[in-house]
Image 1 (tube, helix red, strand yellow):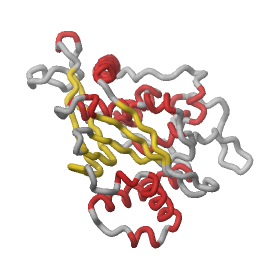
Image 2 (tube, helix red, strand yellow):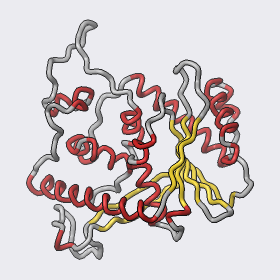
Image 3 (cartoon, one colour):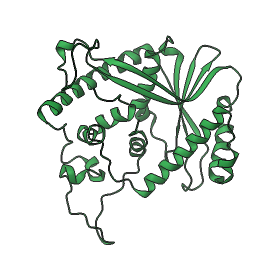
Image 4 (cartoon, one colour):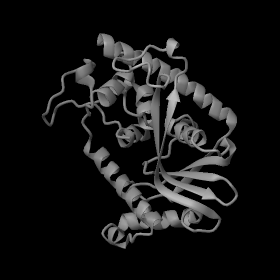
Length: 294
């Protein structure tokens, strides 16, 4: 049985099934640029400070050595004071982990991958896991999910609305609690990393939820995971790789697996005058980097 799938895995699967194979099934990693690693490190530190604040632990020693981080935390507290006060809050937790089993339906309709037994008491399916940066239960019976983002630019609303993190996090909480979908919301708070010029004020973007969305996400999950199940069956029983993108796909030009996929259009050299593929510093690329582990 494969490990639980996160929103990062689902995003990667949509982006490129073959890359999903390399990262998720074969545990390989592509080279990471210095800029990406620095951005990821700053994002990790921001998450750590916010988690310690929620736990009531001192954060002054961390902030004293990083004035830029201290300014960002101060600006976030000013922009979203409701997240850091106790008024109207019944329960709050950071780094909250939830999981569920997503059944694919009738076992006779879905072949079992190699190594899975039909008598384990579960229909074919996948485990799904969600790790919420911040979850807050309100006195009015609603639940506010919060996720911290450190993108250099804010993605369009439509792009985030269809992102697997938005969809899976809302779906997963509704599926594992008795709360109605209409009681849930997810807000991304964008805190710009240092080195991006004059840092803008933190901005929030909220997504409401309802039963119609819940049913659509469930249908989308079933379609994608049934397809993945068939791909895994062929991969494990016949050694058939997962599909690649089209040779003309623009995403291949900045992928770290170009050589393995035989998609490099010209030889790469390691001299100062050599040609290198352009770095992918888009929010989507950074999100895949940060989410690839869980």
